[in-house]
Image: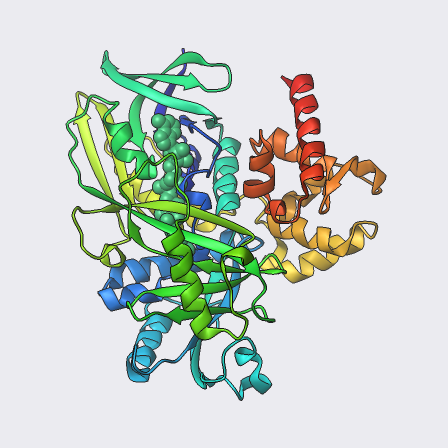
Length: 502
Ligand SMILES: Cc1cc2nc3c(=O)[nH]c(=O)nc-3n(C[C@H](O)[C@H](O)[C@H](O)COP(=O)(O)OP(=O)(O)OC[C@H]3O[C@@H](n4cnc5c(N)ncnc54)[C@H](O)[C@@H]3O)c2cc1C
């Protein structure tokens, strides 16, 4: 019988982090995800591990402090995937006073212990480092501020959590849709559908966790439950254009509507721009950027940068929907980004529903979620995730630069850019990707943009990748560089690999 302590619905950042936390505490775990891991909101974020400077204006001290603490912990857990990023805020006196910004940044610097990142400072944009920070900007910006947060790859962070769960024996089912759950003999009888084979399967568990992000209400309706909660769905979109400026720092730009937009250096050749914040009432299976959002983001960028942009410059866009607490809110930017739990216990048959949360707070959300079950699983160990590495994160002394050098020396036949990418994506698991290869020929077919057969095999064998989308847009971002012919070649290989291995 497929029986586990916990059954989790949803393989986004929060579902996989809960699976990882629970499994590390000795519980048996099964997780089902209807699509690919991270294919929901968790691959559509701004990719920041941050306290959320903006939330200070909403007096969300508790959330910002919690997120800042997490920023430090996550930098240690996965130093290869979570890297410091400097943000430049060009000053616009009519939008926010310098005094207010200085106070905000002071609080941001001191709200939680900060060991790894420099403090914020005020700068003269045209003078600092010979105008380095102003090179992309229009000449009317002279004053600015600098502070640090971190950049990650959201979809890869989901995979690291799923790998961590699997290392502790969790069962991760992808392309498996949750259909229904009923209480039978004091356990949940759960029906799921394998969307590849179109077959129905049953699982049993003591605890059911609904962590389906924006689909949480839909999923809740498939469970006989008394839980009542209000949510608001808020869409945000991003797009990628050819690099707007040199330099490895990001801009945080203020708009007249009080919102902020990020311009972030992306994949060496691009600038990532976003986000918007719009109440979402449409179909969750068709989330895409609208014309109005494109105009909004282009207009704001064109108020700041010398290089102006238009719709035809967009190389790639993506949109995601946040699930936030509350209902009928007028201003979506003002809804809290914190998380909330609803626990229902009927004859020791437990349903835990998770609402909200940020990418940054996934680890603490997971720990808090499983702590809700302390009275139920009395034998459960204490969570240790604050002092353990995510898979691949065990880089000696957290010194990613040194590890990269060592890796490059060990594989002199591998192009420097590929070594960089392997270490940034896989950390110490880069050795597993190379799988004993001793020469470029050993890596097999090259599909394009430095993607070789060995890496594709690794992604399909260990990281649940099944489609070209999984490989090019979530496990890697090589989709930005792939031609149509290269995609066909990769698809043909995937077809053969699946035939041989299934
Ligand atoms: C535009 C935008 C920008 C953001 N930027 C940041 C940022 O920079 N930093 C930050 O910290 N946070 C950010 N966030 C917030 C963060 O991305 C989300 O809070 C987080 O990704 C939510 O993860 P989740 O696991 O709860 O939901 P999801 O990632 O949506 O996962 C839910 C999963 O449930 C699955 N599912 C649904 N129904 C079923 C079913 N019946 N059976 C099986 N599976 C099912 C879905 O397929 C989905 O994969 C941003 C959010 C948005 C929208």
